[in-house]
Amino acid sequence: MISPAALIRRAAPVLACIGLLAVWQVASLALKNDSFPTAIEAIRAVPDILGDKEALINILASLRRMAMGFGVAVLFSIPLGLLMGRSRAVAAFFNPLLMVIYPVPKAALMPIIMLWLGVGDVTKTLVIFLGVSLPVIYHSFEGAKAVEEKMLWSGAAMGLSPLQRLVRIVLPAALPEILTGCRTGLVLALITMITSEMIARQSGAGNILFNALDMGQYDTVFAMIIIVGAMGICLDAIFERIRARLVRWSEPQFDMPLSFS
Amino acid sequence: MKVVPSRSSEWVRPVAPQKPASAIIEIDRVSQVFQTSARKDHLALSDISLTIEEGAFVSILGPSGCGKSTLLYIVGGFVSPTSGAARIKGQAITGPGPDRGPVFQEFALFPWKTVLGNVMYGPRQQGVRVSEAEAQSRSLIEMVGLKGYENFYPKELSGGMKQRVALARTLAYHPEVLLMDEPFGALDAHTRTRLQNDLLNIWERDRKTVLFVTHSVDEAVFLSDKVVMMSKSPGRIRQVIDIDLPRPRRRNELLLDPRYQKYVVDIERMFDESDEAGSAT
Image 1 (cartoon, chains in turn orange, brown):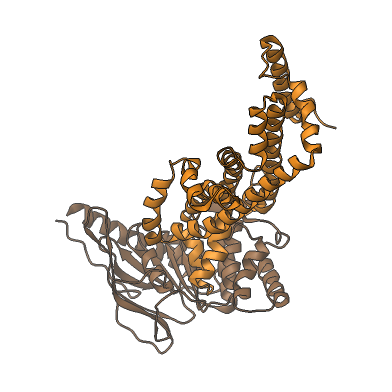
Image 2: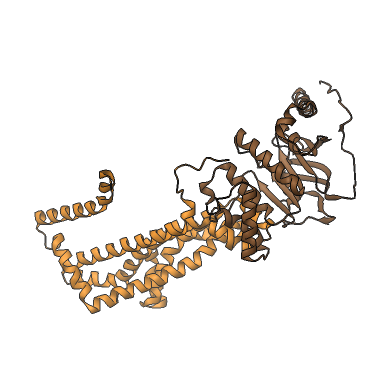
């Protein structure tokens, strides 16, 4: 049996969603503004978008770019972050560079990148890549730095070479921290994906949103916001599941360690 | 300045250069200088020479900050000395190797591996087949008293259990010398006593050479054939004392043995005297 407290805890996210929609509905009815459709109108428009072949192709194209940008960023950033964390020379070289890039909004670089690489997939994927890289590098760096020296010594005594130690000790030891960075990176990938499509309007989910805005189809605009938000929540939930499985060893299964010497 | 009376008896003797045929580790005029943040050099170890015989249980005993762990790390190849050299079987030590197996106070287990995975790590790295490595590891886990915990992760274990896993993990790749760096320092008194007993039982089976760093006088006397007493600032060897007590040693018998008590009391007194001499200057 589920206790009442557990039931409330489980139902909480659903209740929060319903609450938000209710507030939206009431606010919209009260304001009576054309550009602010009611929640029900917006939700009704969702199946229209998802049923439209053109729109689906656009959304899938967005997701493909996002996956590409995210994947390449992770493959590039984890090794770099780990190397920075274990080598003072590598860190001394890259840290100032990253500090300069860090506060720059990646979308602000887009006009220049568009000038060089056009408005196509390469530009948008590159912007996503830039958005994802920094948190992944940062967390990999911090994770690698925190790896206990004695753990590496233990590996060295077993005969692991420096490269083997990086791959087989630093990488797994830093994995919880790395995945925290990847989770932030995933959300940033979604944000930069939409932003890039706002700036280079050619295809994609962001393009549908802004075209609808131009044409005054406000229910479609809000429906797209709901779809993008839902995509973000789903991706995050899937990622969290994978993460929890990969780093099960780092979270205690018992509240107290077994008492036995 | 207070004059420290020099003490001597038949078993307390100053460091004497000795070269027995069975020497496994030789530490030859090793000094270690660390640069502190104030750009001042700190002499952690000063001109240490020591020979360790094969099969001996040798403790390095001293106050914190005397460089005893640094000395162990130099033998392990984890730290290279500023001057001097350490040798194993006549070969200069240039880095870590599976012939010297460390056991650290911090356990340093691989948290993403189970108990079995941790113990199998060394043999697998050495190219032992999975089935064979697993069989060996399981019997080692049983030997350290952790049968039934093979599939537990380190996070789920108490400190004492973690140190048992660390010992089994190191024994699994058959190092010739065990390097133990205050291995029981992080454990409570009761657990510590149990692990000391179990370590002796395990050690008495195959008598591997052990270099054991500790700041506990009882622990050093109880376990060792030889106690190397160090003093600090700079880290030097004060005295090397042979512990001439029968083996196998049983704790309850030993604690009542006047010879054991005399070793403990005399060593403690020597440390006290050096403290007084230090504070008087």
